[in-house]
Image (cartoon, rainbow, N blue to C red; front, side):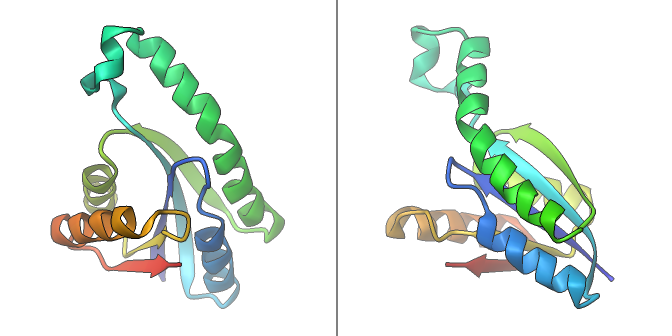
Length: 138
């Protein structure tokens, strides 16, 4: 059985990836699903000059909470057991490191809400950094 990783990027969430994961779980193709909420490491940006890192993290967590609730709600409604974590860092590097560390078999990325150039930039970096197969949903 496979271990699936669903990264939640941004405020739109990963609803299509959660639906796909629920389908694979129902078909008995997947035994474990992990959801990671990837938040930017704001301590390295310019906003730190004007705001405390703790305040910036609180703001980003609050903005991404709805996306995480929607994604996890789909898995809950389908009866899929899952675990979730919140991680900070650049999206591509963080996903690749987490997939390698936790021995994930497949990464399912919901890229439908990303703009065209941003989508291909994220995908190119992720494919370059990760040895784990990546499924991209539009």
